[in-house]
Length: 80
Image (cartoon, rainbow, N blue to C red; front, top):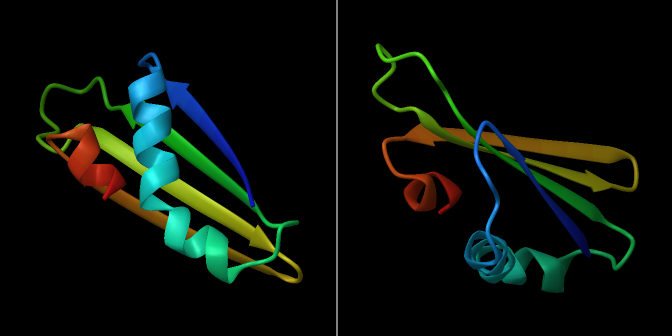
């Protein structure tokens, strides 16, 4: 499975890339090698939004696309 990590309004460090790869390792073992996973990490700039750290994952499989989104005050928690 190919994993692509993107960042919007925040830099994506090597540490974050490793954490994403570690978290999605189980899924990588269960899907085809041709599957693509796009993880977008972003920070909401609105000060009224308490859960400003957002992680969105899109898994492209053959004929199926799965999406997940989570927001929390901590980016690592959102990825988990």
